[in-house]
Amino acid sequence: ARKNLAELSVAQDFPFTALQRFEGLNFEEKESTGTANPKLDNRILRLEVDILKRRGFQPYWERY
Image 1 (spheres, helix red, strand yellow):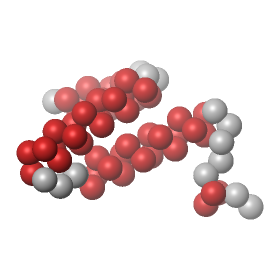
Image 2 (cartoon, one colour; image 1 turned 30 degrees about the horizontal axis):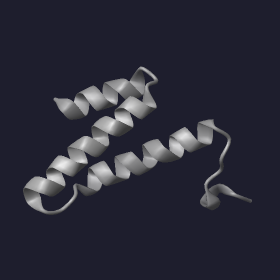
Image 3 (cartoon, helix red, strand yellow; image 1 turned 45 degrees about the vertical axis):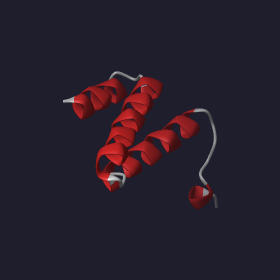
Image 4 (cartoon, one colour; image 1 turned 180 degrees about the horizontal axis):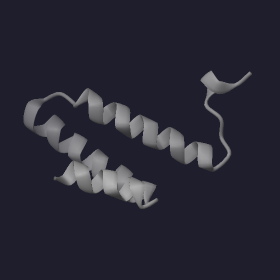
């Protein structure tokens, strides 16, 4: 349910709130299982890249 709330924050254009929620979920998973969820890690990375793109930064893999 908390992951859905984080995704809802993304859809409502609150990326920093969503990022905090995803990082919190990932931290809890690390604490309980000892390893991070790779899907959450990937989602956090994509969200961070999206935030940077909106601010005008371009990831190195998209440079020509």
